[in-house]
Image 1 (cartoon, rainbow, N blue to C red):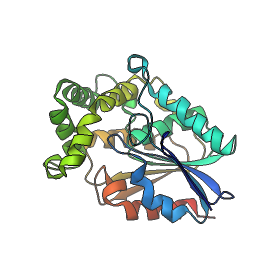
Image 2: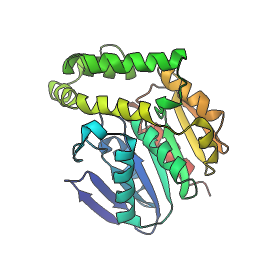
Image 3: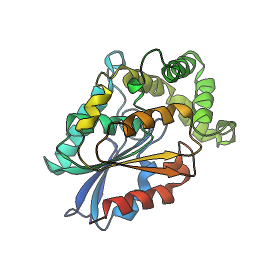
Image 4: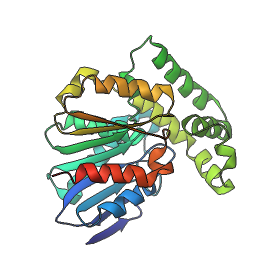
Length: 264
């Protein structure tokens, strides 16, 4: 069993070194810790590579915010993967922002993935300009960017959870979220500025598990609809939960992903 935690870089490698590699990417205002339940469940059969995205957990901050894009995340993630498993193929798991990063990795490496497992990837650039859904996303990003850190953190977390969620959190957690709002704004910039088109996603030939919640915001559902229309080898899974199910329903989501990965 491997248990390597590189605290300064936000990279956590655990599990069976002879098993298939599973790369895990978390959501905005979160960290690799959201995947601990899944990490534990996979430990006997898989090698897990659980990564804090830039600016979250114990990962480095973004060095050049003015030039930030998802390519910034992509290069670091792929470098981490290369350092751990060289050029071996791997399974990929992502939630929300992590799902959007996972989708980008799949688009750019369609022949290397063993599977792609996403819970509501917020690949907002796939929402066409001029549509109501895209306008809602752009308006949402503007509100977060123009508000105080506290107001932005409240608006962001309440939208993706439920009204009043932020104010019911412990003070320490609220403060941590407020301190991470600048990275949330960069996340939106990266998500909206992506250039690949929906038709390119049709080149992802590996099995795709596309999970979503029955109580999630409509804007994440719009991305799901578009992906379901083009992915050639996709399985849809709806959970009686919201956008943050990988955290609020961690055991259920972990079971679904585990069962998908262990199907022979």
